[in-house]
Image (cartoon, rainbow, N blue to C red; front, side, top):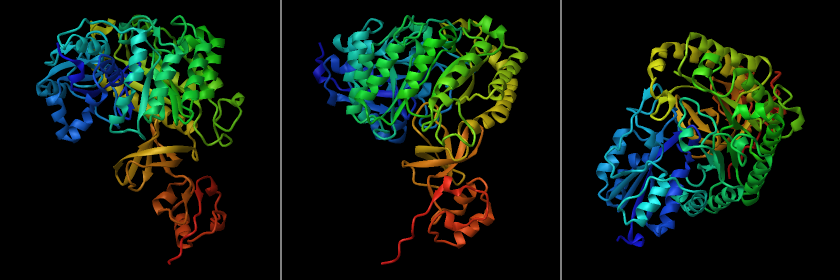
Length: 575
């Protein structure tokens, strides 16, 4: 029998993206934290548990030694939702096989990878179950498999699901692992689980494979936040659930009291948190229980941080597609839910919540507290050319009637065994690829761009934008949070820093910004001309006539409200 106190364990995070769970950096998912907690609970000392992301192994090959020498190597990963990522690159199947081949000890694979593996992490693909040459594959909960495997002396485990008491214990005991993440502490956001499973059975979705909703009581989630805060985490997303409004209820109806306990409890144990966002909210809940939902949405907006997004799974505005795929919300119902979230949470810090939704010249220059995001999925059963037009018309209606969407997510289906889409596969998505590309471009140009300008008009301040990469003479970065805006800043600035930014222009899904407030005594010509209404001539006058004692002293002779973007800092004289 192997003594757990003698075990050395390496956890490799290949990242996850599920319908209700995200773990690509700067996010850290629940899986590595729960697995680490299960190891500790089974008797493995913390100091003998090593955690690496797949990107760290790519960037620093010496760390592969930890994979090679570990008594137990645990791989966590799997993409059941296709996406494009900036902060990290999910592990590809060949890399996962290399991990299994490199490990000399026992190897265990788990996470959503159990649902299937494709040739690549992309939409319009089909998947199949594969063991990728690992000794063990957790077909149940990987954290339960980890606990049972260690208890058995690495002999084996039953494919079982963990219970609420176990996950509550492991969530707190595994919080220490965040300190080994390359992004820790400043650029790391912890995904929090409130529930798993779903009361509905959409054809394409893997979340129902977890069963009906089961909820973690508020004190257990609050306790996890408390533990993560002790290890330096200041950014949190309540993202691991199919519907935040259903939290603590019967799986469908809202429970505002549970939401109040959850959100107020988090604020109490982490008063210095910098981000508190969420992800999924089911629009059918809002339509079926409008008053309870309004109360829940108000509670969320009272406690969260600005720029939050509630992802709505409309998936399709076409009634034919809705019927054939068991989708639970119609376009009309989804529109009503968009309206209600705008009315209850579309206000901006510094104004009366009763004024929501607000935009335009008189609105405070901060992002709204909480807005809906729309998920549209293509390649579903029954899809036809008319489907694309119905989706576009729905989005246009939201804009035309004066409401806001934080983002529109357009993707193609991935097919997994166990879902109703497994028979159809990716056939429809592949047939419609050219139609999909044309439609996606039209939505980006005609709806995304003006909608983004409504949500974040020129002058909107985005605090703490983390600078991530350089491209074409500009520096790009994002805030931490749910679906953060990509911000391009003129010039190449030091990466890894955070700066406050004022929005000056808009793309389809990104914005251009300048550091806020911009010092006109030091700003470059590119930065000055980025400000709306400041052309080359005015920027040249500002530069030639430096230093300026104040912004008004610059006397631009234009209608530009430069004070909304800029300040002056006196030049320091030579010693």
